[in-house]
Amino acid sequence: MRDRLGREITYLRISVGDRCDLRCIYCRSASPRLDTKEEVLSFEEIVEVACVASEFGVRRVRLTGGEPLLRRDIARLVELLRERCDPVDLSMTTNGTRLAPLARELARAGLDRVNVSLDSLRPGRYRAITRGGDLAAVLAGIDRAAEVGLTPVKINAVIMRDVNDDEIPDLARFALERGFVLRFIELMPVGEAVRDGFWRRSFVGAGEIRERLARELPLIPDDEAGGGGPARYFRAEGLPGKVGFITAISRPFCAGCNRLRVTATGELRPCLASDMGIPLRDALRRGELDRVREAFAAAIAGKPPGHRWHEAPTRTGMDELGG
Image 1 (spheres, rainbow, N blue to C red):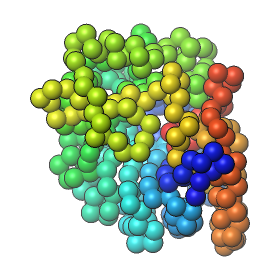
Image 2: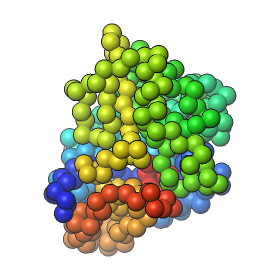
Image 3: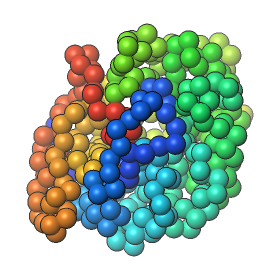
């Protein structure tokens, strides 16, 4: 299915809940409003959404949160998606704190790979950025994911000025030497990140990140990385990993956007930058799948040409959107 600009929609990100065991400074407020259990989509409802999406040509599904590994019996959801929809690529974004004990179960259930958020390699700094996170647990989760075949393991690092920008070379070497795929992500004006001017004060563009990295580690464009996502990838001579740059602000990639999002409470969002969505939950609970199909058709037809972050931030928090 193509939208009015000819973009083929093949990717669906589904938030399985808004709860998280971390409170990252750019993502989540210290005291977030949490959805009730009744407000959040059930596993069966999530599977029905994914199966309808597959009718429209969606081939890639990513489970997000909040923190998806907080959802009880999450491996069962992976199994159901494999049994009922069987996407070409089924992945998950996680903060990694609970990944080590669950990685093998997820792989056996049919998960293909994971993206792990990691904004610092210094325990004290990591604890400060996440408001209490344990770096050792995350590193153990990354290693375990690689051991059980949830690969390529991708690491997401949001770079913030005067917060962690001095770790750019360290993060790159960590991934490159271990065969991981690191994506440096520009801080986006979404939810908590815009509070008290934090986004404008802390933003670091990908061009600056590349320049600072090049002083210590020459990079070569990697034409084989691909993956259909927004990152532009590079490699370093003699090292197995890759480094990518996601330039949502400095070099928007909206013209090639191929994704839709579903929030934990069942709102279908055609764009990360939009605060508007089409509710699916009531139709799902009434068994009205034709209404769900109509919503997907409307979301694809109404997908905006690009974000408007130069005019206004996104009020919805990244944790609610399924970042």
